[in-house]
Length: 247
Image (cartoon, rainbow, N blue to C red; front, top):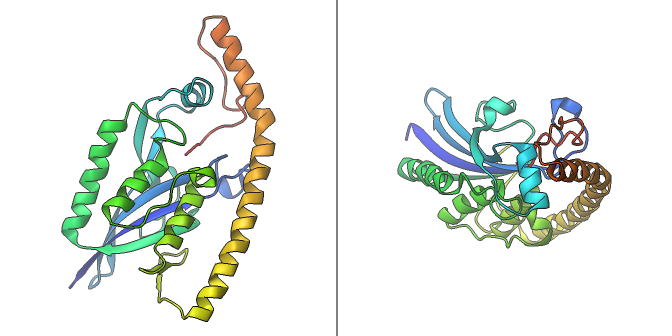
């Protein structure tokens, strides 16, 4: 077969710095990549998508303060982030690649677009967000799904749990290359390493929340003051704690 087709589900951690040209993100982000690979010419074509709030400040006001949904958009991630030849954002840290048929690839793209049309007015952090799109595609692939509870609300944590639950099917490294399943002894070592990484992830998440709390409190006070004065909140991203990117 001259062509192979894949779907890649991926995510990256939240960050509180802007090193390596990475924009501030408390939560991290999840995305999907649809890839066709011509094995003869070694050419790739891809489509990389992510579900984002249409307006970050509006999302913060509605989702975090009023607990109500806000408009969303389906973004070409490679217009927002540097991507490799496969269309995978270079800042991605957790990847799950599944080889599929061309017909299935086309159907998954159609399913994601249909899902977006149904949810474009209903972005709600932790309930209907970037992870929800990845969750839909994983379900369509017939993968075992993690529950979205606790830290699984975070995109990268959800991806790690998704990979772990489907370890019997395949195991993926961060560069998207498939690694054969290991023997029982190696699996035990892998599980121990995963537990250590999990502990580091929990500690990192707690540190993010501790650093973000005072910034969000100032942001919330500004929004409440603007609402009380019955006028739009003219708040810059810097004043809002540089909340430039969420889920």
